[in-house]
Image (cartoon, rainbow, N blue to C red; front, side, top):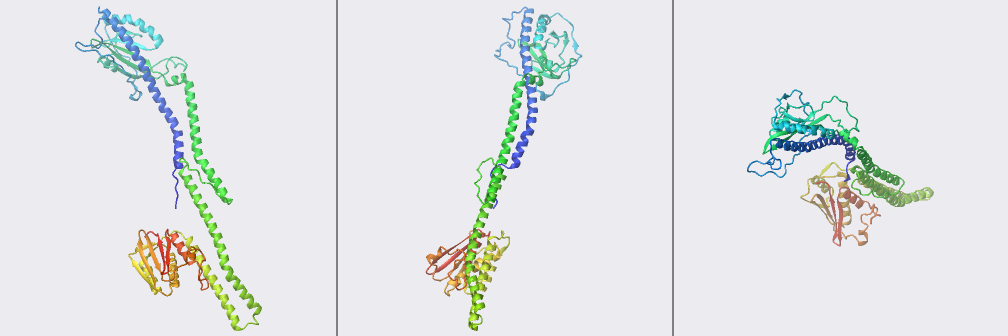
Length: 523
């Protein structure tokens, strides 16, 4: 029987350890990508906040240029006959996964300079925008309703940007953002510099409303925060995280090694104890112990038990054999000495008597040796592969033993068992019944008993005494030693039954004895 452990397989543990090692850099790359996207979103949030502040300042200046008091003006999103919304949050929409556009085109339409309230409000705001850029590093432009610049932190006055996708979207009343490749003729600043080293520039376009209509657009841009620069500024936390990752890797390696090495060491110590003749304790039942090691320990335990049983069996057999062979050997040697010393003084009848005694003792020894060999062959035989026809087998026995009555009550057609073993078991039961049946017929009944073959052998003898019933299946126990009994017949029957996964029982009384043999042989 093969015993399999219930724990994880070693190859799964090793696969888990290797996967962990491989996933660490992969997770680092993914985490860096996620962090870069997070920095882009943070940059966009900053631009949105700046754009809202700039837009509201420009709107107030624009209203004043038109002669309208901002305090009594209609709310930006209020339309006639409708209530204005309490909150209109603007969430970042940029994502590196959506791709990065080429740099902004240099050729843009130039508008004619006309004195309008939008341009006058922008001129008043431009100086403040330039001062703000010193601190926030963001480029900001205010565009009128046609998408032309009226206020800027750069020399972009009168340029019309309505052809840019983000501006076109904002002019339609919707917030927009795009990512473009950064173009710079300046060298990259050092990691410790406040300026960004990123290769992507973020552009946002926020519509400015009045009476529910888009009257301007605030277009802001800034180089996105760089992951390497951000990590440099947070290097202490990064070093702590890296140290924790290394410790986790060492811990995982240690745990996986312990799960494999410690049980193997325990098995090695157990094998050494067994080799020295001792016995090993059971392996602790830990659910994380690999199944291969549990299987190995179970196999070692089974092997140890079988070796111990085999050693006990050999010791007991040696003691029984020496006891059983001692008497005939002593008798043979005594008779041989008498013949050698008293040959001349013996009559021919005396010589013949001693010779017959020697022959009888030698014949008993031969029967003992043959039965012992037969018993050893049965107990150490491999698993059977041949099948036996039940009807043909018992029909042949019926011809050989006419004093027995055979009844085949729907037996299985075939059973998987060695034919020699089956013959040894049935013949021993049959001859034992004929020998103790006092000349009465013996009944043999063969039938199917669930998934086993059942054989009942009944005699009509005096029965078995209570004192002999407990020793009936012991090797070398016999009540007919003088008539040639070896005491191994019923031991052979029990060995055949146990070898096939069956059993043998008996029921006895003054009216006779019935032996029942079950053979679990995959009928």
